[in-house]
Image (cartoon, rainbow, N blue to C red; front, side, top):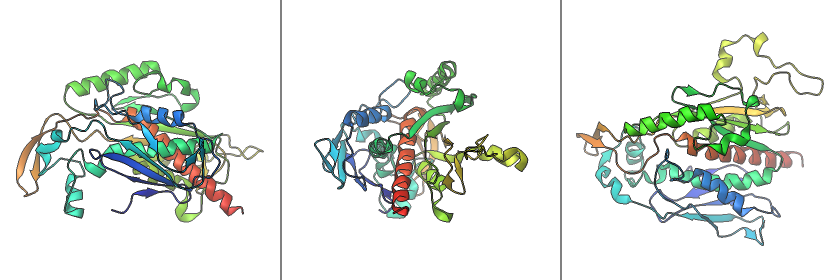
Length: 354
């Protein structure tokens, strides 16, 4: 299966299935001599892992990362960093009822059409459990970035929106509640909404906003490798993502040029930042900010009409342990993918200047 690798110089290849023995990855291109904080890497995994609160899937996985290569005496050696995350709490029997049935809005049908075989246990390779590997690599990329700060947070659940601009938010509050929204009043409404949806046996979508600060000007390549295009690809590769916008996004389409242009200050910064920190596909030194839209989880605890592998119309009912809303656990995944993109471009920029 192609499509398992991401990045050019800082490259991640992942492997494994939701209910297999383990997930894992290989990171190529990480410079040597980087002192790694393993506890910080595990902390990022803990932010993503299932079972962490009452509003996420109750699958119990320790998600402990085990490094196999590329690290010696706490420092990267410059060789491939191999790692695994063992699956400890598989309940494959929860999926036996869909062995020959295609779940609506899942990858069941498309995987079967493409490969002629599919791992129906939790979606196999198409499961969002694969993103644990991205979080490990992203946590290493964050440590490589040093001064660059990446903060993601939940900005909406259903029709409940955090209306404040990110400049007015305290990012230290992101981890203060289980929905990861840095506004306590809005967070409480979001949590209650997710609980209501779960009781109904249904699911709900939402958005995650990400802000990247202290990015130097000059990252990105012209034409096909623009910085914002790679960020968009990174985010759209995350399970359940349906949309990506940066800077003014779709709201910019309503504006006039005289309203939208970012006027320069003498030092090269801009008075406004509707460009979202990227102009001509290259970072301009201002904050990079974007928003990612996540659909409602496709597995619902209600009866739905679908088809089986023979084309017969059947009725199915979701089983197993699933998130009623993915956005709280998606926050560290968004940060990880953003870190991978910025780290890759920083390394490319060094090569360009040689």
